[in-house]
Length: 232
Image 1 (spheres, helix red, strand yellow):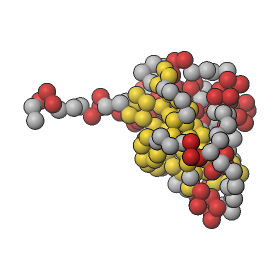
Image 2 (image 1 turned 120 degrees about the vertical axis):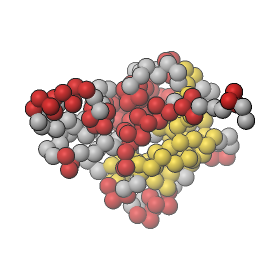
Image 3 (image 1 turned 180 degrees about the vertical axis):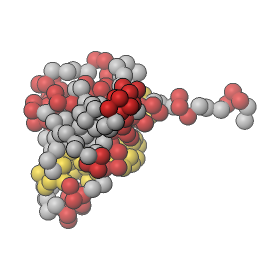
């Protein structure tokens, strides 16, 4: 193989499926720390999984339907209850994925799952940001599972800590209307720990936490390093 044939892995663009806070374009761009102009998106669904609330949090986690039924006692009778709706994004760089991994941390595992697009890809820059438009985009009725024949293999963050899940299902419309704005200025803990401003504050004050009043999630303040998590 000649040097001209060698592909730099950092230049390969990838796809990922988001089903929670990152379905909102403002949150996604905030976590990626860029304007997302290189990205394209479409609404999509994941079959055979359930999206549950995480106890005491405004973000969800997905697990298989069998786990949902056996561990949490949920029965998923309708098609709407046996699929997870979300956003499929393409064009992600290695730097984007690194920030996403930092954001999700050990509470989630990045796995390759089959995702079914519901519409053609469009530039992320054209994504609606009004609450009602965003909700409507992910509320199109699904008629039958048989109609979801085309699937693509993409990265998806699956929840690992089952004991933290609530039996109740997480609802995107409730998140958009009542909680999304809390995430628009959120910066993951690890990104703050890497920042020069944080380093300078620590050097000046000797205090790793109160020098910048770190929170692991919107509305929460940690009192010690043992309490710090970087999960969505």
